[in-house]
Image 1 (cartoon, rainbow over the protein chains, first blue to last red):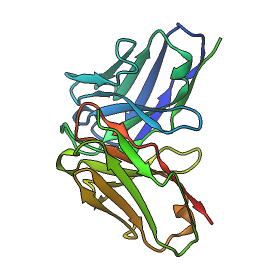
Image 2 (image 1 turned 90 degrees about the vertical axis):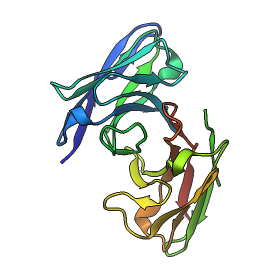
Image 3 (image 1 turned 90 degrees about the horizontal axis):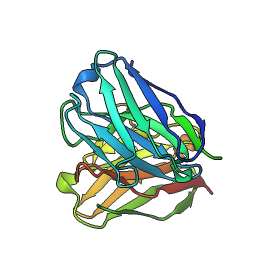
Image 4 (image 1 turned 60 degrees about the vertical axis):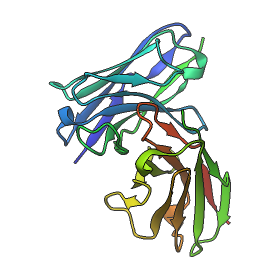
Length: 122
Length: 109
């Protein structure tokens, strides 16, 4: 069965960095685009970033562009999110999510991890 | 970016009733690349519908979707107790900028 397990969250001071990981299993990781989506406490969902199945393309929400970097290691079936210059409004549960359709530009997300909480506070 | 506006913000209904949730886009959603998700407290979202009207794997047929262009609807016939949750619409057609609506909370009356 498909599993996505995030890790790396925690409490970090404003301006510092954090790297999240998402370990995938139960599917051919290298054939699916992957995403990070976040949810601030008590708020709605915000898409953060996407990386194509082969890692050749990546895109970001304006709110994180220039500060966050999405990457993947297909040999390890692992997705990453490097978060730099963190701000208080980056505080959220961060989910990794998998494209439903392989190797396609337009796809909904059919599996999500349980999320990892990032708290940015001094 | 495409802004999605969901209404109502909160919907209060009883089990067995019919729920109609709306999602309106600020511009046309390409090829009906519109999805609906259900989220319960402490859980990640679950994909219900994609392509505006196609049910995801394992989703019961009391969930249905319709619409095109800028107006989309999620209908739940005969509400079950487990259906009370928050529902989000998502457009994934204006790649790469994927957006979600702000959510509709479906609560027990």
